[in-house]
Image 1 (cartoon, rainbow, N blue to C red):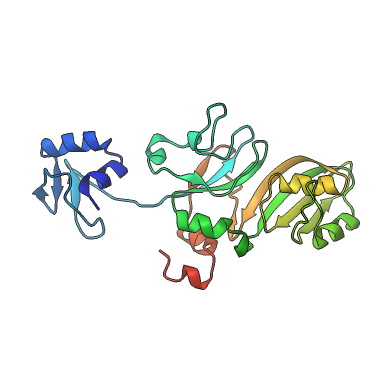
Image 2: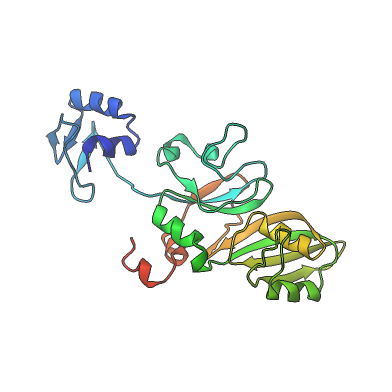
Length: 244
């Protein structure tokens, strides 16, 4: 990797800023001053310093966010605040993006990363990655609804969903349920309940694959995944062997 790219990606400013640091002889590689920005380095082997500070290069970030309402799952938007806007500046430099989408008015678990390979594995329709939602639904949810979800319901555009699991937590004027789906059609959970004559009043994603929402995270906050969480999140198939 070029030295200027590594330093820029590590938070030392733009390529222009990095060149200025090099001209000032503030950058060393293996204790030797380097002024050429095009020099190639290996962050796994070479010891790089800017002034008295060692550079610790990080290629990927993996963040768990408890997404709040009113924020959209996108990298940028001219009108609304995005989940990326909630990140600190030092994290925004990684050019991360949300894995999949949560509706603007849906809360809960959202994975944010710059690891395109992992994102593809988690969002590919062929992988059948399970996503679980907690929902409050207007109307008394019945066993008939559970059976309909198990068989797959026909949405308003004629699409029949894959089988889904519906677990009734509480029956009332506003019922509480958990829904598990393996696909991600637009507004899918809401449209599935509309297909059985009911309306979702509140929706929160609580898990995706092997990743479970940390309930201690306040809405709008996030944290890096633990090594254990990342291990269980990665799909276990031949395509992912040797994935690091």
